[in-house]
Amino acid sequence: MIVEKDESEFLNKLIQYRRELHKYPELSMKEFETTKRIKKWLKENNIEIIDLPLKVGVVAQIKGKYEGKTIALRADIDALPINEETGFDFSSVNSGVMHACGHDFHMASILGAAIILNEKKSELHGTVRIIFQPAEEIAQGAKFVYEHGVLDGVDAIFGMHNRPDLEVGTIGVKDGPLMASVDRFEIDVIGLGGHAGMPHDCIDPIVVSSQIVSAMQAIVSRNLNPFDNAVISVTRLQSGNTWNVIPDKAELEGTVRTFQNDMREKIKDLMKRTAEGIAKAYGAKIKFRWFSYLPVVDNDPQFEGIARESAEELGYKTVYAERNLGGEDFAFYQEKIPGFFVWVGVQGSEEWHQPSYNLKEEALTVAANYFSNLAIKVLDKWNLTKIS
Image (cartoon, rainbow, N blue to C red; front, side, top):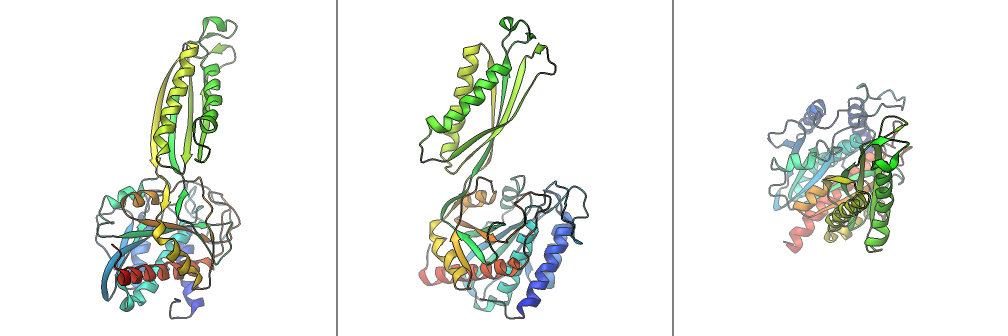
């Protein structure tokens, strides 16, 4: 289902959108000008904007001629605190801010899908809500928008992330877990400081911390089922300030990733128990803090087949979507309603979050055509089968 106009003209339009968004990136919850641009383009394309009290972010909708269910397409809109090094004439003009994760691509693509759907609304059995969501990079945006009612009446939601390692014209599809949960931990190890030459009079928090770091690695290999997937990474160990003094305290910080939501609490308890046990053996104490960030992106299997069909009937290639230990706040939507998240190939030069990150813009129409076709097919299927 290709938009009924010159395809190169449509691509050029989406490229213009993407490049303008790329040139003026904004950080999470500060996407004020981005919001204005999206609203402007929606109005220019006669797409209805839903009036919601959002200071950043936009929600639009396309109501079909025929009654039916409501689905949502979601694009994230925030950028990263990175200095751009691409050298493009549309490089970021906002110092220290860059669309280094391709959210500019997501916005332009989903806007393109909205344009196509708006032109096809006389054939549409239901409603498609378009969510331009802020603050994905800080894992707050999905919660922010659904607390303002964007999911009210929505039966399912669909989203994507670009993949630089996939060729243009490729869609990665997989049901079940796709992106990992994200949790953060902090551990304070409290010992007894003193002279470095007299360690017997001290409780060395550095030694205790080193034992804790080593023991944390055995949690995954010896306490969890080998068929479960988890990563525990200690990313900061900080203690002391000079060469001849054993400090009183050490601080550890890191992250836990898993593809099983039910493992998160178990891992937390095992980590706390392990740290407390080691500290007690040395006569030290710990303070353990846990911060839950994101659940698993877990794709509803009822959409796996139609997600593939929607790509293949357009002539696009589908591949098995490789799981990724990065996090995505699309997972919060999936805790509320059924959802499905795919990879879209952009044949990029770099991986996400790199200062020279770039992508092939021909992928814009691929994503736009794919998501408009997916929306139509899901609503048609529900209309014909009356899936509840």
